[in-house]
Image (cartoon, rainbow, N blue to C red):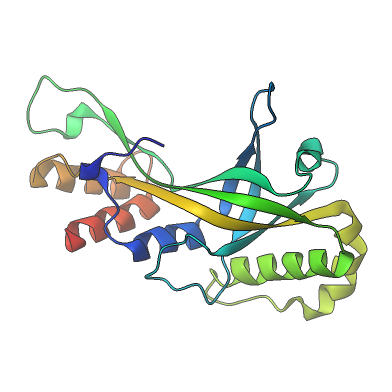
Length: 213
């Protein structure tokens, strides 16, 4: 991903938080001579990942349905790309304080490159499924207790392929109107709150970027 310094993330903590709060990511890989393949899957950080440290070296967990042939490309350690992103908000020139102008889009994105290894044993796959549920439930104000459904998990695990992915590189861009005037940024924020297409997640990142600049 090409990044611009003026759209740098406000902090390493913001990168980790985006990855944790937007775990439904795009997992992409390529086989020589073929077009890249991508699957949208939940990819979760370990709960004890340091929120202020680089994600390089961290091991993430992911899984997909066995019916998806993408997993067959993962024969041995495989380089992959993971894309985590916020929603994307259209910024209309109606919000600007001068013309002529061109519209743009605001968003936050983190790209993580890593090495994927398939987990082929049933117990390890079940561990990944349970860790994924725990990670996603942790984002809710109250958590569902999966203990009564563990037998069901065990029955569906044969239809799942799980992975470990060790991160080797991180890139991030938080493009949130940093190059605009404070008046325009106020207008953008207001539009993301009360406009025709609200983006509460972008409001949070916009506020954070402004406060940490």
